[in-house]
Length: 130
Image (cartoon, rainbow, N blue to C red; front, side, top):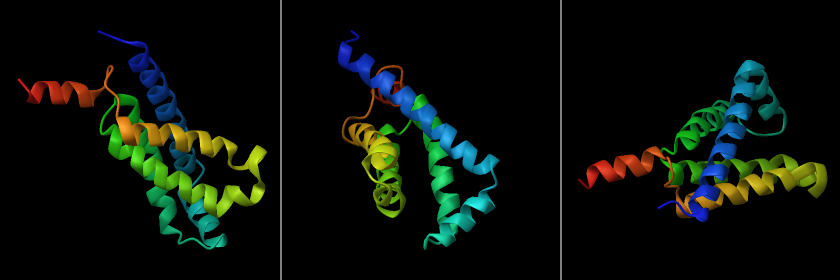
């Protein structure tokens, strides 16, 4: 039986996935080399841009599908903590890290709880238990 909590988690999962797909895709479309250069300019190794963009894009797709939601949630938490600490914190709360903080909280929810409703994780575990 579907309950309100499962519907809420589904809505959060879909929105989170779409947001991260958008962020990851834009990094590749805008030129990942440019993003790597920007990472270098703020004191981070440029190769991290490739890792972050891949986590955002592939992780966003996986989150949207409900695949490995706990693992992807954990990776998103790491990416968001890095973004907040290295970039957003200095710009302040509003117009700075408030948006990332919300994404961090939603990602932490999936790290802790996963997602069942219409998720590949649920269907895979259901098939294994048969």
